[in-house]
Length: 274
Image 1 (cartoon, rainbow, N blue to C red):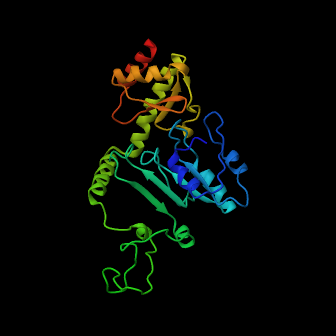
Image 2 (cartoon, helix red, strand yellow; image 1 turned 180 degrees about the vertical axis):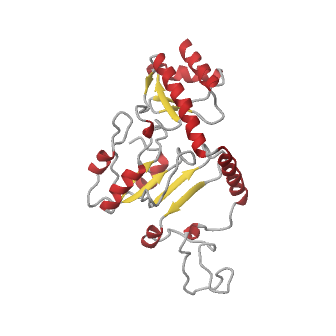
Image 3 (cartoon, rainbow, N blue to C red; image 1 turned 90 degrees about the vertical axis):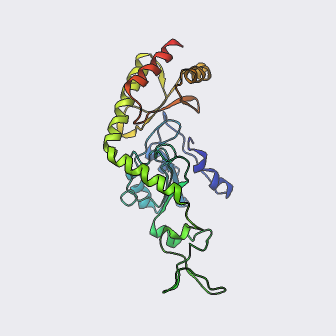
């Protein structure tokens, strides 16, 4: 129910029958997902991390259950990639997409897109371009007209035309930079910062919307609410150069590696003054 619209609009536009799982205290228990699935279910679509609350789904456990039932597993990893690891094979993921503008330090360069080999064999590519076609032996590209051709077996089949190279170079540079820090170090740091933020919010007796009891379900996002003061809170924070997001009925804080405890202290100080 709380999915970002990028995970739902395309399917609704195709007039597919969609069933939306209701959250339980901002969580999506796997049992509740499976209860809405039956022999007619084609696929389950979920975000690895929910954009509005930061809830992190156990993809491995969910993927195992869906594989048993022969249900496709489609994952939106925009709010987790590249900070939180994903193994598409061990998690039995059939399709994965991730925009890297937020956590990928790259800006709006497009979307990473993965499909499994089994998925590509079963579901034809909806379109094709000159770079989608596997050239005949000895040829650089397919140029013949009115002759049979086949698409690449790999994800190259989704490449319609020439690459936009500059964003790809930027993405590679960003990944190299993050690797020098170490993704485990990054996860440890954002958890330290969110731990500190959560303790501060509890001390101020501010209601936390995000599920924070288990670190396995947490991410770099913490969402809280001041109820009817949310709009004023966001305006006041912005005046103090503290930038958060209005998401659903809450205020979303997304901590990153460039943040520190002093940033969070200042946030808490402003919240206390409201």
